[in-house]
Amino acid sequence: MTYGTKLRNIRLQKSLSQAEVANAIGLDQSSYSRIESDQSEPKAGVLMKIAKFYQVDITSLYPPSAL
Image (cartoon, rainbow, N blue to C red):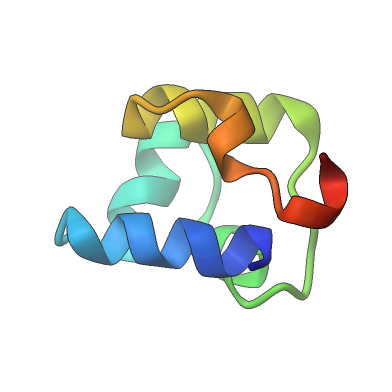
């Protein structure tokens, strides 16, 4: 499972839009969309903000190949 798939699943479980998540972590919606669609890999700082926003351990967001 990729970063994008994991992030999309969490976002949908919480009934949030991409724009809501992007605003909360300081990105524009198109940048967040590229992360979810695996067109872009999140930088460490962005991944930390996402984990904090979703209140999850950052390692739970890593794809298996990254561990």
